[in-house]
Amino acid sequence: MKRTLLVAAALCACQPAFAAKSNFNPDINLVLDGRYVSYSNTSDYSLPGFMLGEEAGRSPQGLQLGHGELSLSANIDDMFFGKLTTAIADHEGETEIELEEAFIRTLALGNGLSIKAGRFFSDIGYLNSQHAHTWDFTDAPLIYRGLFGNQLIDDGFQINWLAPTDLFLKLGLESLRGERFPAGGGTNNGSGAYTVFAKLGGDVGISHSWQLGISHWSAKIENRLAAAHEHTSAITEVPSFSGDSYINGIDFIWKWAPKGNKRERYLTLQAEYFERNENGGIELINSSPLETSTYIGRQTGWYLQAVYKFKPQWRIGYRYDQLHADNNGSNVNVLTEAGVNDQGHKPTRSSLMLDYSHSEYSRVRLQLSKDDSYQDSDSMIMIQYIMSLGAHGAHRF
Image (cartoon, rainbow, N blue to C red; front, side, top):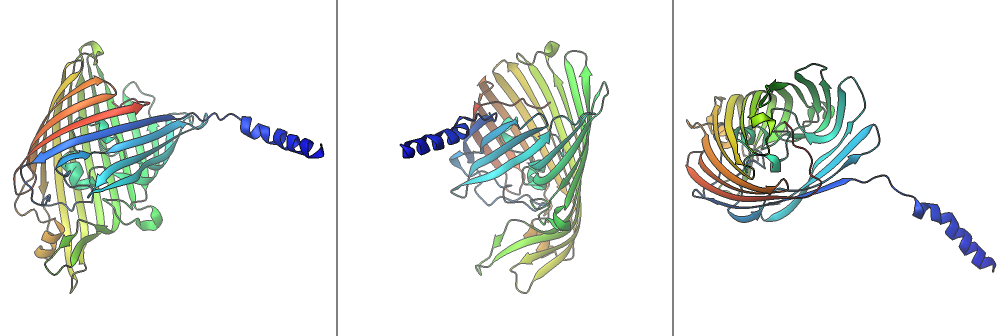
């Protein structure tokens, strides 16, 4: 009898823990990205004048998984919002899972202020802060590939201020660890990179809207690694840059939708321009004797794209990319190995896309590209599907 009472008492004591209800009810979203890729040029990819990060190459040919994402997000309480996103992708025949976002954001500071902390997409430029599955084209513009390794993601914090004005005006500052490409070193005790930006926008009548942005990124870089080079001696030489790096950018977007109804028809014009200046030195790790060079670099690039929704479920778009590099240093051979010798080539690319969206949760896309971004011209065909399962966040302007 005593044993029975003890068991009953223990069960009663435990009951509140089992019965307690959690208020945490996150939005869960899974994005499935699949594609078929074919191109006429099978030589190794390079972008003359630019050191490329690991994620900046072309997709492999054939059928493949693209960039899948699994996201969880929710209001933590009345003060904070949190989000976590993992990216799932194939890389060199292996499936990799990477923590893409993990941040908190304030909800109620007032006076137009908000703070974000953790890992997030930088607000540099226009396209960078958007997830890849929301882009209008399958791949990133060439200038994003050359400067950011497709996208600039880093750890740190961001402060935003939304001005109480009739025109949309947002000012922001980011302090970043600077350990990921294009910074690469995490110098200055884990605060190696900084971004400032401003965005201004408004409406023109009921059918037109626009936004203009300017941004600046700077970093003190130690040992930013680029793609490695294998030689006949079986020694892999890895280019490494150390020095100062500054990026300035301007972006502009214009949207037209008859009477503001973009569900039926719209036209979007979008453009971004970036300039990067670097001053420091390059060395080839594993070279013997160690090969080095001074390095002064200036790289510019822009893209212009137009996307027209001509029926509720159909869109067509065109994008043109162009880059230019003016780099010099004391050792031409080292600059060539590092990829910053433009070898007299100005990278360009033209892309045409057509996509069909049965709903806001599904999209199928065909993209054709004439790629002259490196010395050997390439004709590319990409077929892509993007499917969203679960909560679907609103897209930005």
